[in-house]
Amino acid sequence: VGYLPQEVGLFAGTIAQNISRFTPEPDPNAIVEAARRSGAHSLILKLADGYDTQIGDGGAQLSGGQRQRIGLARALFGEACLLVFDEPNSNLDAEGEQALVNAVHDAKKRGCSIIIMAHRPSAIAACEKLLVMRDGTQQAFGPKDEVLKQVTKPTVVGGQQAATPLRTQTTA
Image (cartoon, rainbow, N blue to C red; front, side, top):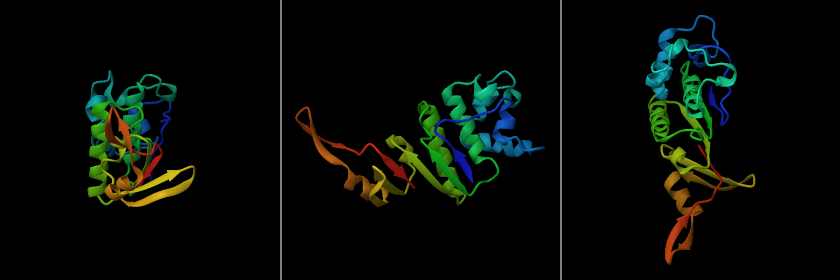
């Protein structure tokens, strides 16, 4: 199981240690592969010491987006077959969001099951099925496009009708 929490918790140590979950004697190729799949490899190489960069307690030396990308690499490390992402794009810029979408597509091609909890629509771009919850109760479940039609309600904005999605969305 690979898990990416909304608030990524990193530990004092190197980027490589954090990606490998402090595995004793991890395969360096597996660390790089996880970073490549997460789209973090080039970001890591730009840091002073690359994969050996010390990040400090909680990843203090990194921006929120960098922590999120390292957390994604950690979730992908070790060929997990079930990935659980909680607000995986909460700290990402456009480049980071694209890397996330690419990572989800890649994981699906490798046969992984992925559960994404999200409020931002961009996080569900690669999802096939959608479960919408409100106040702990299921509102809709099924193919993403069908569910989105069910849960959007028409509103009038500037004299024109626009669709307004529910704010709480959980995807699977």
